[in-house]
Image (cartoon, rainbow, N blue to C red):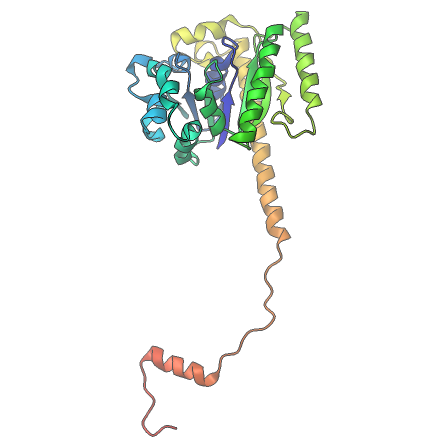
Length: 313
């Protein structure tokens, strides 16, 4: 199961839109996907057509009440499940302050479904608090949606500092997989300048041991599209609302890119396992020990229940 946190502490950059539509596209391709709403605003829940007021427990129950993850998820679409959120999640961080192991509660909860889904994608809140920390402790990869603006770059640096801290202290497997540029206008000069700055920053990290050493800007940019802004008010994915618009086309390509990466990674893991098995020579048996004939006859007599005849030597 590939686990991904869609993360940016800045609001309004396209986190929820990216989670919903990427997950929907992956599900349409036949993958089994579960999405988690860790935002107290419950925008992911609303986007998928579920009213937060109807959610009795959801992600709050999993984090606070030790509710079973599998019992709290809802089947939202074909191949697409949702762990919904409601307003109760607002108080989750203060309630978790005194809990031992509070950073890894979500990681423990999702272990029971590791073999049941192909993708687990988390919509993180626009902050770097305890809810986000739980998400980062539970996943292996981070996707950062980013608006190509100057101020977005300032928050980008702070975000990477947090990721590095979690990587060193809580989750050594955590890696930044990529940056997805949203609301991108290729006709303007500023978005292209910001993109070049990020590419240079990521290139400088190559060969280091930091959590973003292998990160890249995804080759697909999400173009500015009004249909993406309208779809949540109808509780629909972009493919249900307007499947032929630029937004649908872009997110379909994002899903195809992520899925292709997963297939390559799976093939590499299979090859690595095969190489490891071939590298270990089979155990050699130098000689086969021979049994003592008299001892073997005695053991045979005991097994069959026979007795030595009287008068035998």
